[in-house]
Length: 165
Image (cartoon, rainbow, N blue to C red; front, side, top):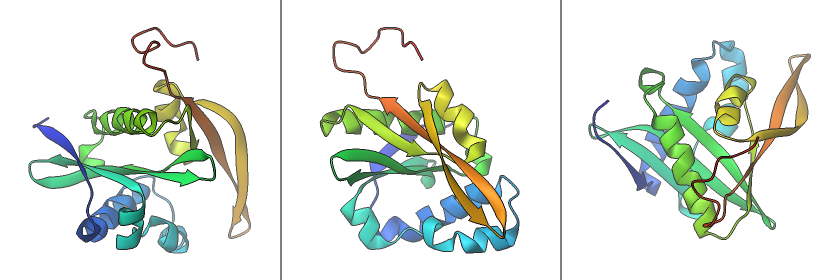
């Protein structure tokens, strides 16, 4: 992999981030009508980027992935974490996740909530998140179970210690 840097996303990056989200979601071969049903969720608006901690992984001058953290009440949610399919399995997703954890710690949070696509649950669990439930929805009469995960943010004194998950 070439050099990657993680930078704060700007409002003008919204279209590129949206393209990443759609491309990554299509990677799982969902029916195109489902992708269309998720249009609002996958579309990143400029005001969303401005209002939330949104960071992009830039490789060779192009955005290859991004994440967003959203404060909800007194909790913190990993709202998005997407990587372009041709950039998957190169450490970009795990680097973005590690960056999100550092931002969460800097913001003073002890836990990060994640509602995962079923295909991404293993990725998050490998990084130390644990399932705490499921969120059930329905799409075209088909039941969908989305794993609800939490990641406990290690304190400064816990960094480097082995995690028990």
